[in-house]
Amino acid sequence: MILPFKNTGNANDRDISCELRFKNAPVKVIRTGNSVRISAFVKFTGDADSQFTDTVKSENPISVKKDTCPGETYAEVAANAIMNLWKGDFDVGGQSLNVETLIYSNNPSPNNVLKPFSADKKQKTLKIHIGAGDKGHLSSLPGALAMRSHEGIRIFGGILNNESVLKWSVKKSSSAIVIYDHIRSSKTGKMEFIGRNWFEQTAAHEFGHALGLGDAYNAGYRGGRWVGSLDGYYAPYCYQVEDENGNRNCVYVPDNDIMLQGEAHNHVSDNDIRMVLNAYKTGKVQLFPRGCKNIKDRRKVNKDIRE
Ligand SMILES: [Zn+2]
Image 1: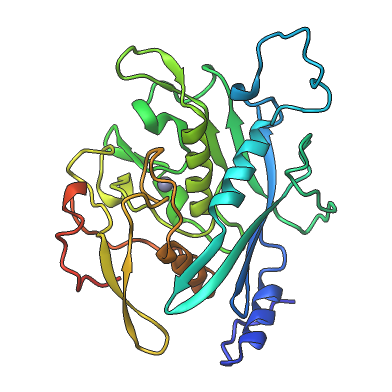
Image 2: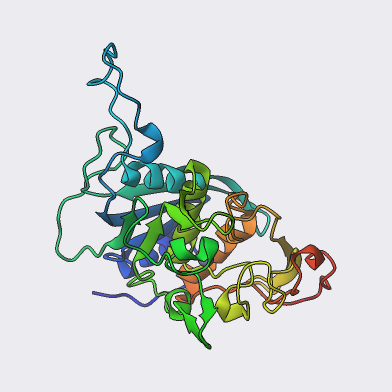
């Protein structure tokens, strides 16, 4: 049974409605008072159960900890990145909210990172596909964009994957997230490992799309051909929003915001959490306003820009 979402003004009533409405959603966001619990039910595929590249140790015959200290799988590294970045204390509209994220998955987890869940047919899952190594992916696409599934790429006159971000819904979350750990170097032309930091940033950034957020950089659907090109729009550094009581607040997109692109952008901001709650309240994907075409001008955009 699906109950209509009803804001009665009573926090507890509202939260119970949320829970019933989103019962079998792949990613649930439940607010109870000042606590926000994000629960993602994930099916990892591809090379997700393989040992993560960085943890593959060279052959060491005198190692005695081999059996008691298992290496992390790709699924475990991705899940830890998501759970560690999408958590903490956040200020949303003057309220301090504590956010916690849990990844439920029945993939193997030698380090007990993934929490198993009972296989209920009605429980939908978010698919996260990991492609390890230098073969079998979109390696012909330019640079960093080759490793992401959800980034709009303007190419051949069309926008590839444009719809992946825009077609988000609470019921289905995003389409499958695809993460590759190799990209073609623009310098050498060879496929190279992206490194642990960037792999983790990618997992947490793509999870932002699964939570109903758009990109803060100049993605294809924001007019951009590629990151750094001056034909698309970055989110402004700050802009105004109006809450349900009609109060206006300034919100900020910090320079290291997770919804920007690249491994240095590994911070979930207060505004990101505000947008996640709005996505789950309204059922609509939350897009950043179009600020400026040059990332260096983000602070010059007029503060009065509205959502
Ligand atoms: Zn993105």
